[in-house]
Image (cartoon, rainbow, N blue to C red):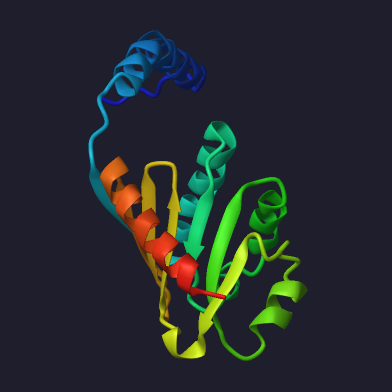
Length: 178
């Protein structure tokens, strides 16, 4: 024999679960933030993965006042994030960042068209022969390696040693770039 419950019981069940979550959440947050830093490697795929990691970069850098350093792949990212890319560019205007791009035909015009706020302080170029489908983004204690082909694949390395090593690599290229 089957007897249906009053639909209002759903609300009561949800409120009960919400109450349990509210009770345990502060303990979980405290435990999560008190962990010593571990290293981790996460893989993200597709445009949604790219958006999630770019949003994380902006959030981390606003929160901790970190510089973002980027080794570009010929300005391919805007092709994947046509509608959301201007949102990220808007935040760059108020952040510390540096970018190295391969000096391919039309890249300077593309950067201007995208309203990317460039100056000699934050942008340098390598010869076009160094164009690669791989980009690198380093901020806080995180490094993102982007493989920009048909569907973007991203590897997020979390750990101070990873970030320090990739930032050193970036600095080497920054000193070579013009």
